[in-house]
Length: 227
Length: 394
Image (cartoon, rainbow over all chains, first blue to last red; front, side):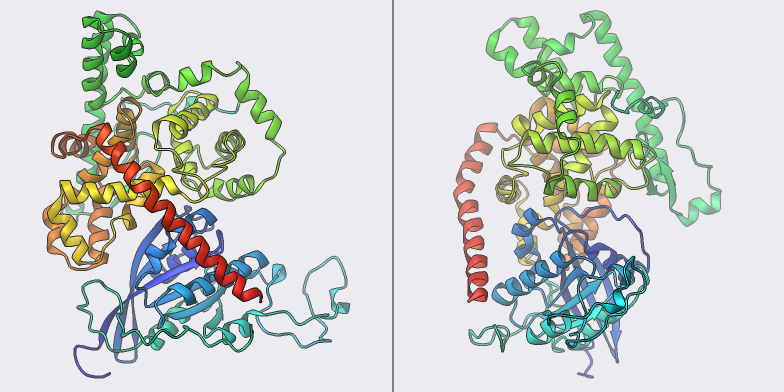
């Protein structure tokens, strides 16, 4: 790993997720350190690149930020084909976006590069009061504490175990973080963590700019223990 | 009556120069980037050279206006509205009509003066004819009937209103949002197969800026989607767009073989950059006046023009593209080029003179050839995704 020539690599990364989950905002925060409340809606996909340092090496991410509207999903294979990594983004205040994120995970597991490093990002983590998707499994009987509500929410007790994001990620071989493009929470961390997890064998001169790996035998990408 | 009054305030002042201070000689040397507003109120970034180019373009627009006024003086007012080339050729072979049609084609390729655009576009695109076949109050009735309805399309439209050219002095106001909303929502009900497709927001926004009224912008959208562009471009699986991308790839191989081979070797799929061009009709990629010059020709000559323009963008960068070996560099070259194409003639000269002839018949044949492959690919994808989900539920 420390050998010269292998210190710098390029990695194609794709962001997928529901419309309005904040994919473009995460990229803008990561690439330019900015946050804009209303980002231009992405058509097709937008391209960015950014380099991160990991230990004594660097990873140059070539980032494809894709359009979220359902009908654009038919274009997605073009963007995730050959990708070394993917960030699947959902909005913690929107349950439907979490369901959509799971569909993306399934699609990548079935169609994507089997060695793809996948991250699940629960974005808009700054909007705690509007949270709809719990990050961790809440044990039955726990009393929830909500800071603002017109009801006394502290009396509400969790009735059911939900398939929460952390558990879901673990079961599907993804790593999970809650992020906020607005406050910058965990944004750089997601990318750094991906960089650390990338197979470290490719020189930067790879002309197509993607990490190529020997495909293992036709095994499913993820061993799922419960389905 | 639909809240477009303040468009009057947006009327372009052709006499004014680009409103920035002349940078000092040191600044010129340093090639600093300045922000300025273009003819249509969009904030653009560029260097001092770009500012000068934009001022030259304004001058050319004025000169071109004089040509149009002179022709109006000799041929009579509105002569250009009676010479739609295809209908003229079909219905009459009168020599004078033919001459007018050819004159108009040449003239439009050099640009329609901004003040005449609404009238000329509305007539030549076929929007006027389309409107005339509907009841007089069609648009008004439609907008009233659907204003309180909530559908997935209206939700998506509402989400995109503040994300359509944010920061524009008219589009990004409550009034601009309301006008854009009415046009997009009305169209989503007119054609439920399309509903609302992201990308249309940029097209409709630019049409609102150009056309005199919201109603005319609506009919322009209608004629674009129903007559001018290839069908199903914006439908639920973008099949028409997929077809256009495949046709474009074949054209690139034919017209720019060196570039096509080089990009192939890099495993660079040109659709990565072209999809946005075809869905937004360049509204999101090119400077506003350049986009509108492309649209001038689009409305007179048809959708093949989009291929000419897309090919021209690659052609203009041929030498530089051949020297790079990374996907990122390819995209950087193309994007830098499109964002800085402040002089529309730089692009259109290449599009008309260096791409070569492509007949409508040839392109239609290409589309027909690609359609089954696209449908098969989309069906296959759907089938695979359904089988994943079915397996998941067991």
